[in-house]
Image 1 (spheres, rainbow, N blue to C red):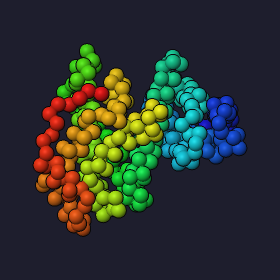
Image 2: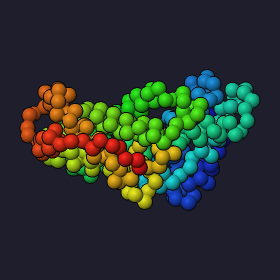
Image 3: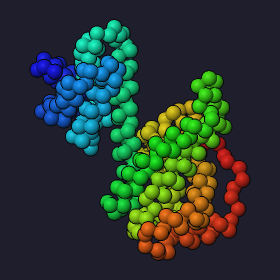
Image 4: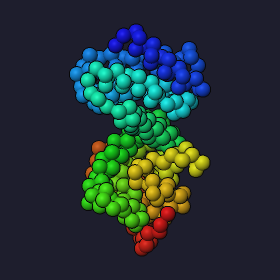
Length: 296
């Protein structure tokens, strides 16, 4: 790519960020990452759709590293800047494509990258508030991030995807899918981090799990619309409230599961110590679970 391309990217970024980013920062924080991403000769060998997605993905890696923790990061729309590159890629490919189609591809990829970054940030923030040790909170956040996508894919394979695409899902089916995702996500994520959690100051008990679920529902508070639950699962239902009945049901089911063979296997590799969760586990095992699930 040429100096003219760099200047075009710079001007597009400058215009898009004028309301929040000092001009002195846009070159090192944003422009250089976009320009570097589109300067790889291999990009030009890809079909234009793949090339556009690859540029956005590569640029966002550097951009997130340079500015991901800054206050204005989520307030900047870089789609116009990426469109400068996309026009060039489409032109060089020789394809005849409508501008609106190119825009949709670029916008979808950019928003997907922002969503991934927002999920990472929210998981880290939530875990840091529960487990104060940096090593512990970082590990738990990483495990929850890894298990998130595993649970997401598993829930999508529950047999309702085709029906959803053709007719949509009724509210009961959507609610059941959200509940299934929540349980699978936490079961896998906490399981991955079980040893380091058990050795932490806070440890793990039913109350902590309930607190974790509530914070994941609204990691930035009730006034902020974001939720760690997949948007595709709750767009129609809305975000579950803080008094969601399934929070208690899920935590009880998880502790019943963890008190059995599964938890024993997790504990083998770590030091064995009595945690605050033991009292809650005994209470759970001796109680009767609420029979009915309440709607949101």
